[in-house]
Image 1 (spheres, one colour):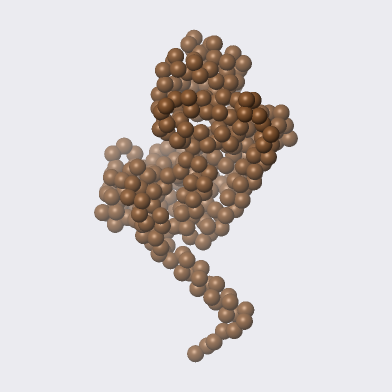
Image 2 (tube, rainbow, N blue to C red):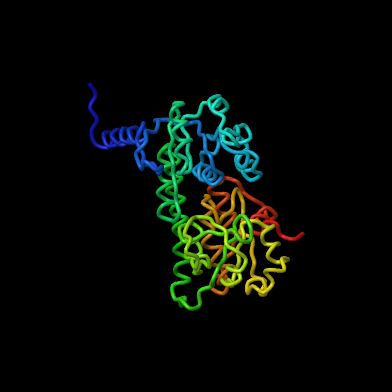
Length: 341
C-alpha cells in the first residue's frame, strides 16, 4: 500500500474533493415543487428552452454543449458568430414539444425556465434530468448561474466565478457614481416590451436594473406587479416618463411617429432609446445583463459617466465571456440596434 504525506497528500485530497464535487449531485430547483433535483455527474449535451438561458450557458463556456433549443437560439446571428456549433442543434422546443426530435439528440440534461412544470415532468418521464431556474434580481440571477455552472462542471464553475467578479465590479461602479443622487432627481423610466403599451412591473428583472441605474420604473404606479402586462394609452400618458427604453427598434419608431405619443415628455425631448442587443437584449435575463446596469445608468445620467466607454466594455465582455472579438461595426450594431442608416 502506498501512503502519501505532506504536499502530495494535500494534492491527492484536493483532487478527490474536486472529483466528488463534480460527480452526480442534487441541486435546488425553482419549479413549483421547490425540490432538489438529481443531476448527472458528467453533462456534455444540453437541452435549453430559452434564449436568455442559452446565453448564460454560452458565457459559462458551454455553448457547444447545447444540442436542442429554439429557433431564436439556433438561428441567432450572434450565437452563430460566438458558437458556430449551435447550427448543429435541433429546435426541439419550437411550437409543440417533439419528444422524438429531442431524444435523437441524446441530451444529458435539460435547463428550463420555471413555471413549465408540465414540460419538466414530460422530460423526466423520458429519462432526462431537468433543472428549472428563475431570477428577477441580482442575487437570484447569480444563484441560478451558480447552479447551472455547478451542473455543468469545474470549468464552468471557474468561468462563473470570473463572471461574478466582473458583474459585481460594474454594479459597484454604478452604485458609487449614484450614491448621492437625490430621490427627487431620479428619472422616471418606462420600459416597452412587446409593444408601446406592454411593460413590466415591480416583480420583474426590468425593475431591478432601472432601480440600480438610479431610475424609477414608471410602471410601479400600476397595482399590477406581474412580470409583463398591458396598459392603456391614457395610463401611459398619465405616467409621462422622462425616458422611454424599448426592447425593439420598431417600438421606438412607434413612439416617435405615433400621434398618440407626441406629448410625452420623453418623446418631446428625444429620449426614447432602443436597448442594446447582442445574443439577446441586455434588458432581459440574459448573460449580457451584466452590461445593462452600466448602459442604463450612463443613459439616464450621462454627466456622471463621461469617462465610461461602452464600446470598450462591450469588447471586453464579448472577448472574455463569449470568446469572440467584435469589431467596431459589430459593437456599434450591438449598442444601437435598429439605428437609422
